[in-house]
Amino acid sequence: MLKVYNTKKEIFDEALLFMEKCLLDVMDQEDVLEVKSEIERNGRNRKGYLGQLVQKYVFGQELVDNRAEADFKIAGVELKTTPIKEHRTKEYIAKERLVFSMIDYMTIIAENWENSSFLEKNKLILLLFYLYKKELGILDYKFKFCYELDFLNNISNKDAIQIKKDWEYIVEKIKKGEAHLLSEGDTFYLGACTKASDSSVRRQQPNSDIPAKPRAFSLKQSYLNYIIQNEILSTHEDYKSISEESKTIDEKIKDKLERFIGKTDNEIIEELGLVINKKQKQYKRTLANFMISGSNSKIEEFEKANVKLRVITLENNDNLKESISFPHFDYREIVNQDWEHSDLYRLFEEKRFLFVIFKKDKEGKSISFQGWKFWNFPAFDMEEAQRIWELNKEMIQSGKYDSLPKVSDSKIVHVRPHGRNRDDKIETPHGTMETKKCFWIHANYIKESLGL
DNA sequence: GCATGATCATGC
DNA sequence: GCATGATCATGC
Image 1 (tube, protein in one colour):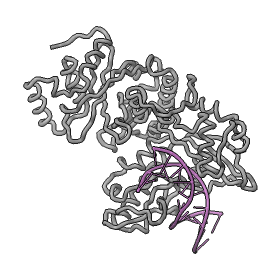
Image 2 (tube, protein in one colour; image 1 turned 90 degrees about the vertical axis):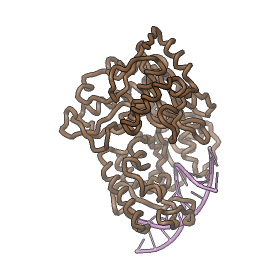
Image 3 (cartoon, helix red, strand yellow; image 1 turned 45 degrees about the vertical axis):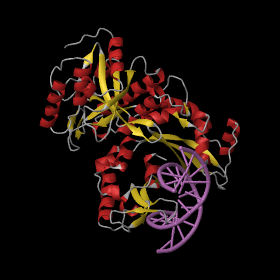
Image 4 (cartoon, protein in one colour; image 1 turned 90 degrees about the horizontal axis):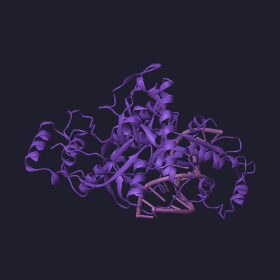
């Protein structure tokens, strides 16, 4: 039954034939029974098993062994399966990030991007997207579309440069003995995501005695979403690129923003020839968008990289008055979550921020542009964030809604109302109604962390 | 109708 | 002056 493929095209054609089908459609009765009993023996679906089955029953390849890590390379093409889910307005979105092989902290510090084991293994990938549904079994997932991911050729040039930069950033950090401080939000498209059977696992790193969480390279979920929306579904979303040049995002932003440093909002508005209502509450944000991309549309690079733009305004004495708010949490949800699966953890681990910084003038009549900073939550403060998150959970569990973490409880985050007004309430686990609240990062902490 | 980002208002 | 509470404006 071993099938031979000589070219990439033959493999891709085979994959295309499989679209709109599930494994059940292509397996015979006997195989189905065998696989089903195998699934029963091993309990829940093993990770990587779906990939192995696809390799065997769609592409007719014998499995080399039963390693959990599916490694099924044919004619230089690495096959990967990845789940999507249905979405209310966007048709499909990625269910997860796309995870590659583990980062070997000890050996990677001797590699360059060009000769990296990552590129060696992953330079040409055939991505098979299947539609995940909770109630379905592994043999019932319908495959929807496939996509060629080619890190050297078909990922557009501009992205390849950023991905190389991301890889180098991660390796630099490991070289410095800071593998334990890695975070997915450190980088733009290629991330170092945690990967272990449970969150307590640690491994050795070079140049430091501090054990680090095991991590793997991954393409951000946001990046996959961009591919799905724009390259596969061809939805016409109104994205604007910062620039089409082959530069890293850092460089592109510098190109756009540097010339405005020190200028007042009026000067910037005039220079860009904009008509903006300054009374608008969002007006600084609108201004920032125009400064970066020349429009008020979503910025392509930021969508792909899970970057959030936030405007902050310093007082004339350089004080930062306002803390940073996030979407309100769900009281009922939070008491059933653990830290590693919480919204706050995901935000702090995965999100990257671009702070656009203005400063008020003496009279408070105008503002001037001070600069910008990319930032993500520092890994060394994650434990403190967790402590406050757990405290908040405890208080909610015990119904002490007036004792949620305050500013004085931490130097980093606190909990405060965040709704339309005090009557904007949601249900609690106790069945009562409480004002919507969210986590806020202290203004002082942001200011210090940004070095302002 | 609500989420989101941002800022205003009050009281100690 | 800071901590805490409250709410506005926009866009989807």
